[in-house]
Length: 317
Ligand code: A3P
Picture 1: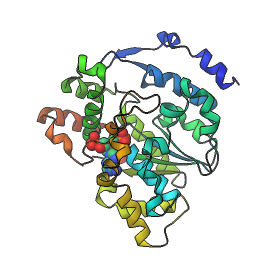
Picture 2 (picture 1 turned 60 degrees about the vertical axis):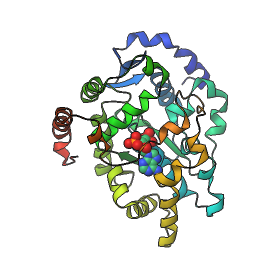
Picture 3 (picture 1 turned 135 degrees about the horizontal axis):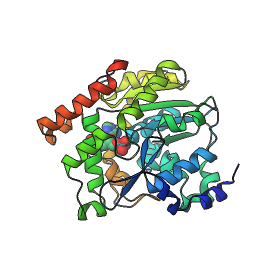
Picture 4 (picture 1 turned 45 degrees about the horizontal axis):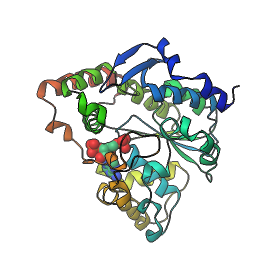
């Protein structure tokens, strides 16, 4: 087994020339790896994660497709696990993406290499995020007793959230990602960590097969009844709440209204190793915003793909 340093050296960017590529948006290309699409940076870091990350039995892994509510779940999981008095809530001064790093987007980055052992030495239980599909990281995650929480979201809202998110990048300002193209690429699965459908399906199937190990939750059900789902999350993680007031407090401190108004989350500062500012993780935080952007025929096209992909497991948006 290579050391982390050797692995990084074995993965110079030019090795990626052997992968099938597709032009994405801005100046960015996507690379196909085990039937999923990755940006060059995350293709490298994903390979490093696969070779080096060893989950502990106490780890909590938050898995998600981008723009499905990862930041919200990071805040919720942190609050559920590390219950703290209101005034000392770390969410007041820390962006959820900093409190809970993601394996391939925050941790296993070349520029953070010297800090990885320190970042991974967090007090147990560690909470770590990932966008890596189960088809790729499943063997690593099933090598320990770690628990997995997977969040997903209506595909049309996910796409619209992603579309807005990438508009904030400088490259895209120069070479816009037209909505028409975005819909086409989303339906074909050619978006980072896509296809969205295959991503959600594998975690969904795993949650049905191993409900003690994988908990599957949707953005919409959390919006509709946050208290119930926060209780469900806490029970799944083995740390149930004793009273409803505590649940209420967690839900409130992680609500879009409160979180998006914390100074740290409004910051234009760039997180370590990330091209967009902290503020870009908060936009509207609503269900159904897609209708304000998608034309009827775009909605029909996405709905057709959704029915076709999700029908067999009885999971339809
Ligand atoms: P919108 O762009 O639809 O507003 P991710 O964290 O996976 O990148 O997802 C980002 C989406 O979650 C954005 O959706 C963002 O506004 C929304 N979001 C962030 N924090 C939230 C919260 N506390 N409650 C509800 N939605 C939230």
